[in-house]
Image (cartoon, rainbow, N blue to C red; front, side, top):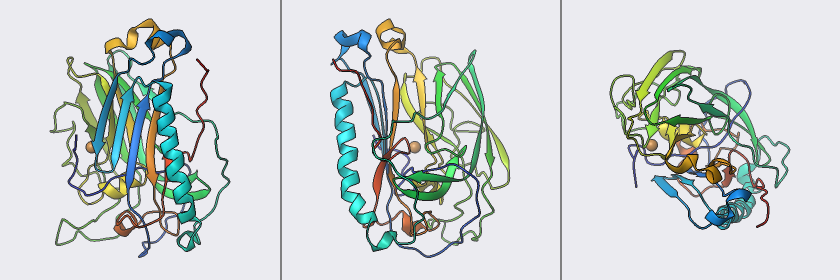
Length: 321
Ligand SMILES: [Cu+2]
């Protein structure tokens, strides 16, 4: 399923701390690509369910999310894919183009870290999403990118059909330096954003899933949407959808999982199993470890590597059997 294609190529990557702004510079490299997978592996109490898996896949340009119940075999496939990509691209980042990128400690096979979870209570999720620059150490590089709440990926939102989501979005990015172009098809205003609930069947108007809103830096905005009671359960995601800046922001890491719980989640064997959200991003950055020009996310002939929940080659440990 393809959606959200008004900008050519999305993707997530990184985040965590305050910092000084880097100047806009014409730079080398990159292309964007992100994959996000939410996986609910079968726990030890539900061995007989292994092999019966529920999966939903969403593909968006370079970004994909998958969710559901996946067997350890499938999880293994995902990890192998990440490992394969990483090895390939490690060489790229050791090349001349990565000279000058700030370095950071890196330990391969570190335990997988789950994104923070924000869950609805009594039919409502009321939360704040602060959009800001953040430092993120990933794969041995210290990157400086736009984020939700200073984390990459953003928090995981867990709701139920019938719930109301009330989000206060605070755009803490600095002012845009560039004027609005004559040709609006050109990338512009990378610090202006908005908020899109990818895949949700909700109102596209007003304060709801309105991709035509423009959320300027230095301002805060209310977002409110109601999920229909008969909404399909599953894993969705959220990301910016502002024309002209969405690609750069998503590539930098502004994305998170949105899970509508229900269906057979309450079956004891499933509810007692470990639920893992895996968000796979292709990490891209320029020689300063940031993304400040569209050329950084396009074309694709540049170094890159994959991350899982903002980590390069993390380890997922599972009990045998
Ligand atoms: Cu989308």
